[in-house]
Image (cartoon, rainbow, N blue to C red; front, side, top):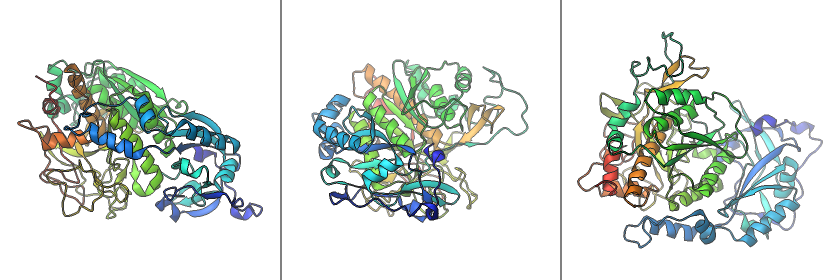
Length: 568
C-alpha cells in the first residue's frame, strides 16, 4: 500500500517547509472538493509525506449528471418507451461523458505539472494519473501531511485542493490525496476447535457436519434449486467480484466447488497492477465460494487491485463499467460515511448509476457492526458505498431451522465490534444522498426517516456459514464464517440465474436497485421476498415491509423470476 512508502518528516525538521505560494489564478476547484474526511481531522499532525513518494490519483471529470439521471429514470420507468433499454459504454460516453476538449485540456495541464496520465476512462468520466508528492503539492497548492489517529498513520492534504480558474470547472473530484479510509470487510472466521483432520483436495468429510449452513441449505431456502430444476445454473453468464488487496488460494475455491459437485469457472482481471499471490484474509475466498457454489456454471471475473483503498475501489468499479462484460457485481467492502469526502462519494455513486443504466446489478454488503458502522457502540452510522443511492445494499439474517431473523449479537462486546455485532443498516448522513423516489413501499417512510437514503435494500443469511479456507487463522480447511460479506455474493449469484432466465425469454436484465422495489410493490400472486419481521440490528427492529435491519427481506429467486416474466 502507498502508506507503507511514506517517510515521515517531522514538522520540526522540515527546514521551515511551508505551503507553496498561492497562485493568483488558483481558486478552490469546487465547493464539493474537500480536504480530509471528517473523521480524519481528529488525527494528530506528525510530519509530511516524502517529496519523492509516488501516488496514484483518480481525477473525476464533469459529466452530464442531469442527462444521466433522466436516462436512469426512463430506463426504470415501466411506462416509459425507454424502459429496460439499457445503454452501452459507448452510448454512455457519447451522451453523458466529458467532452474530448475537456479531457485534453485537463490532461495537458496535469502533464505540464509533472503528472503521468496512466489512463483515460472510455466512459469519459475520469483520468487515472501518477505523480510525486512534490508535484501534487505544487499543482494543487496543498501540503500532503502525515497524521496519527488511534494507532493508524495516514496522510492527507492540508486543505482543499485549488486549481487554476480555467481547469477548476473541469475537475469534479480528486481521489487519492489521502489513504485514511479503512474499507476492508473481513469475515469472522469461527474456526474448528477440537477437529484435527487435515484437509486434502476434495475432502468433504467435514462439510455439513459442523452445524453450519451449507450451499444446499441456502439453495433450498432462497429457491435457487427451483431455478436449477429449470436448467438455469448460470451458463453463458458472467459475475464480477471486486477484491481490494485480498488474494485467494484457488485450491480452496476448487475444493469448495468439488464438495458441491461443481467445477470452478474463474479468472482474474487486474486493476491498476497485479495483486501479489497469497491466501488472503478470507474475504475473497468467501465471496468466490458463495458464487461458485450457488451459480455453478457462471463465469466469475475477479476484479483484483492491490490498492485496498478508495482509489482502488473506484478504479475497479470504473473498469467494470467500461468493460461491460458482466451482468451482476458483488462487493463486500465499505466503511462509515465519515471516512470519505463528499466529492468521492458523489463520484462513486455516479459510476453506480452508470452501471445501472448499463443494466448491471451491483450488490454491496451493508457492514457487520450493526447500526454502528464506525464501531462505536451507540453512535449511529451506515456503511458507504452500501449507502449510495444506486447501490443495492445487502443486510444479513440469522437462519435456524428454516426461520430467519435479523442478524445481531444478543450480547455484544460493546467495546470492540470485530465485525460480529450484526447487520448494518440505518440512515445516510450524507445530505447529497436524498432518498430516491423509487425507494418506496410499506415501511419505508417511518418514524426515523429524515429524507436521506435508507439502508439496506435487501438481506440474506450472514451467520454460521460453512466455507473452505486454509489461511493462517483457519488451518484446518472447513470453517464457519459470518458477515454481510456472504449475503452480497448470495444475492449476486441468485440474480445471475434470474438474468439467465430473462435472457432466454428475450427480456431485459434485472438491472439496478429500482427493479427490486418495483418487484416488492407489485408482486402479483407471487412472493418474491421473505419478509423478516423479527430481530434487530442493536437499534432498529425488523418489522412488516421494509426495515433498517433487513430491507425488503430475503429472496425467493424463483418468484422474482416469475414476477419479471422470466418463466412460463
